[in-house]
Amino acid sequence: MSYIQLKHTPILTQGSHHEYYRHPESHGKCIRIATDHDGQRSSNREMTFIQLMRGRDRSTKTLPRFYGLIRTDLGLGYVYDFIENYDGTPAPTLADILSDERMLLEHVGIEKLKNLLTFLHEDIIENQIISTKMTPRKILFPKSSDSIIHIYLTEPLGSSALIPLEYISNYFALRKIHSKWEKLKEEALSCAEYDIVKDLIKGM
Image (cartoon, rainbow, N blue to C red; front, side, top):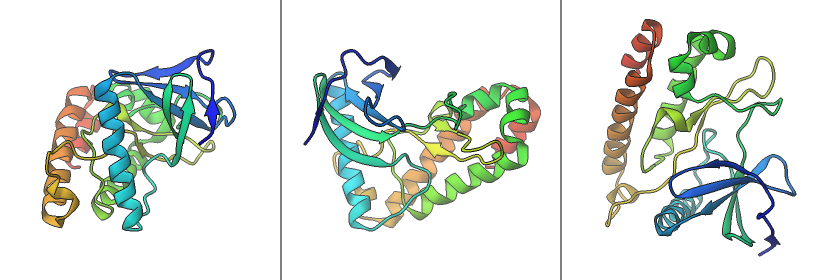
């Protein structure tokens, strides 16, 4: 396992239990570092789920690619694609778009937003993607060119259940996915600031 220093690298973003750094040697990647015990538990759950997906030969287009582990001066790092627009600007989140009609119209458009959310939902179901939660601020819409937009789910993956039945049963997997999706819709509605997206969310 290779080693890299991060202590002089600016933090890209910081959550309750993780910090994210730009990979110093690969601009399109980031390194996630757990900052406490809960963060390490979350990372362990995610590794278990990624291994499960790979063992089942699942292929998804809506999750950032995981490249492996790396040793750092801040602890064990997890290397992923860094999701941003092609010009280096931050990719807007679903929460951003739902609260800013101008951003919706200029960045994605209502029909494209509807199609991308449908694509995400179908991908989650088809590949039985289990995440600890789904929130509008962790769904990103990066542009790879002026006209091409993608959608990514950046929530921590895996189940926090003591016995994760959703890993071994299609029924429990789909039930868990439905529950998380409905909670996402509820939170999305609370972010929505204008009627056109409220109608879209209700129809998801």
